[in-house]
Image 1: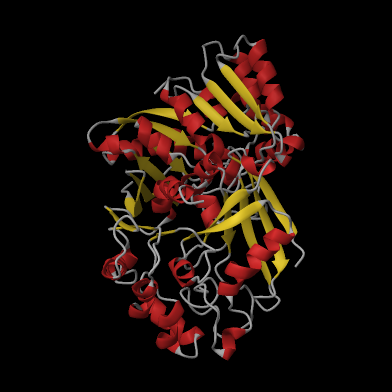
Image 2 (image 1 turned 90 degrees about the vertical axis):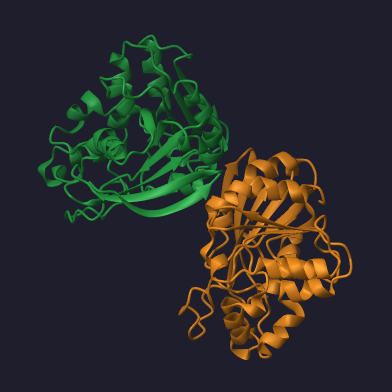
Length: 277
Length: 277
């Protein structure tokens, strides 16, 4: 798992490094990620916030367009930007659609044998990347979670302290994107997904207090089409006893699904996590 | 010159609009640009700052990666992002290199007959776009200049009030990029270029006070290769009587030529222009 440094850029007095390595979790394919180290990392360990990008993205979108670095540098927080799927697995049909296969790994471990060798983004993000960073001596002290409601809610350890998300798919078993993904990647389909990959299903069973912030825009076409369903998540959270101090779902008037929306509220999300890291 | 609205995104409580139109200056080709309107534009006219992107860029790079919107919204400044060259002129060799032809129009009007029909970015940026915006009723009141030292210095009117640039080619007649561009686009080559397209040559002849801010990074490979030559510009400015209040050239330790560098100092540049707009 030797890391190869592909590039480095100074930004807001910190450093963005891009690494490549041969990923065991992804069946031996090469995986890339970006990591931002704030200036404080030069002299002490710093907390790490993981940014999990959405459909079609790579490890670069959030780094290039997200606008997170100024606030992360001010708060002394490192940011990890993984890719969103394996690349070049060579599976038949992998590149046929933009919402399934390459660029759409859904942060799950596939159980359908066709995908199970390579499509293990859950293990890649939650186990392999932390190990690789630690082995490389990158000075992080623990992990926060960002953008991946299900990783946060399904975690049985205290690996993640808080989670936030922009325009997430909140109830994938009830929307077209999620149904397509789960029926493709999982042998057990929707029923298997309910156990660990659907945020709305997971919050129903969550007993411990949570720290969740979600922003979505009313101008978001995917919201309008019923792909996101944030109302379902909020309702389930309240029914399970998680009040608005634990779960904030903010409706932002007129904003859409783009990185322009994300960059507008990027500092808000960093400040939210800074309270818990 | 009817404008076609290609997309619109809300960002930092303002609006980014992308337009296309058939450009007379570019020989009838379709041209695209982005314009950011701050929230203040809803109720009053606002000053306009023009962002002229560098080699290989389109109208999208600065908008997506530059990090200018928060400060522009706070200061009530509109931002115009033109493209960097005509697209699809169909000229032999136009797409052979990344530093000449498509994506590398150098904001000049070509006099070489091979390019003169389409490669007129000087007219496109300084005359055509202001006309198009005015005709469309977009509520801007005057123009500032950003990133285009030569347009600012060669302007014989007071069209531009201030100029700033990130890692600019300061003395193109003395660097490989400039020599290639001028010998290709201009019938009179380097000698013709000295008259209106070289910032260092132009500042020697400038008598009126100027407002110029330049940032470059010491980690910039193009700087190290002698493509930028900011020292030549600074020396020429001082020799011509423009002191450090009029011309600031800031050397930023460790930063490179990327948008990570630009985004780090984006707010600084907006604040600089806000004093003059």
